[in-house]
Image (cartoon, rainbow, N blue to C red; front, side):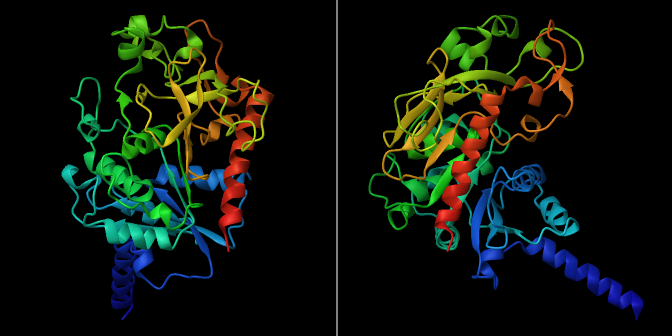
Length: 368
């Protein structure tokens, strides 16, 4: 009898972990939900850290998180289900979109469209995270410098964003945001690049090659340090402790997003954490640029011209190590190892908190 009960329990757990159909089940409509696209264990841990630290300052008694992904993605999201279950994270859930999706279906109604509407109608916002390069064919270019091994993720995220915002690649399409224009759409790094591509923009496939005419790591490291967006020293000189990222300043444009919407001084040039070799090239017509690199050549932030809560940044304000001391690392051979947290000055950390404060305020204002 005990063996039968044990088998039934295991079978029940397997069903629970494999189903991952939150919005198709009897979910609580007493709460509001924020969507986390590509809910890997890492991304769930990041959001949980931000909430626990009070950076993402929201009422989790009223607001839950739903991780959304596509069945074609390479990542094994049963790992995320097991992590959520083992950690007792009752405010986190998963929803798998299963409709077949190919590149030619991205900018139109497709087998995922009904799921997108279901997700949209039962949530108040969505967050897109970082990751690998988007296949250039998605924005009409040949592949010169991009590296992608999970095209399913990109097809899914581009078409999801296209369904939300619309874009110039299909001007007859009516976006979901036309029904709820205050809906939150934000992202970091790849998230910003995907937003731009979905709306009709393009990317620099490699910043050093296409902006600075640099084709080898040995010349990448000679670019002015404030304009390096990831670290190539570990590819040039052997040694432990190199960070893969770069901490560098940015500057704000005349756009009111930084200054009025996010209440910070327009004169400040905060340090940010970056780890990318691609960036926005042709800005989609629906976006204004809110921040740039110090030399002005790399777009660091965008905001939608019509929808007030659609915005994103190229850098990574979500990285946990920015907010507390962790491992010591260095950028260049001559640097003394230090934590990422200690590399940030007080004004830059305050900027990051203000940024998260704005996202938190938007979520709480949209909540019932």
